[in-house]
Image (cartoon, rainbow, N blue to C red):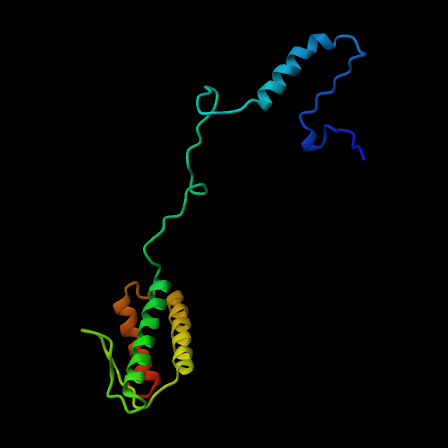
Amino acid sequence: MFERPDSRNRWDSPLFELWPSRDGIEKSSAAIVDAIMYLTKKVDSKTRDVKVLQPTLATQNARITEATPLYEMDRATQEVINMIVEAQSQAMGGPLSGVSLGPGLATIDISWPFGLPELLRLRRTFIKLTGQSSLSGPPPPSDADSAKRMFADYLNRELGNG
């Protein structure tokens, strides 16, 4: 089906109508050819009339930081969970005196073994609480040691040992 071009439609604009049977087309054909050439010419950086666009906030790429605070929190809490699971597997179901997270960090006191689902639930809850409190208070810790320290305090409090 053929749709007749209409100059009011933006996809038909600018609309140049050529009527070969009418007189005077030769007079305006040079202007039409110039306009078509201008609109369809290939633009490159060597053309003089091209304006170089300066980057704006909308066109700049976002800076990629090493890690976001949420990523650091996620990674640090996963490391703590892995340490607890490893300590529990080495104890072979026996009592644990505590899980050390490293020098300068708190020890997690666990009196009986916890399953991985329970630890993961506590981890998810901690991350949600930290994210919610960062909206109204200080931002979440951006380094792994602070995140581990906060998570250890949270676990000791939730497990009834803190």
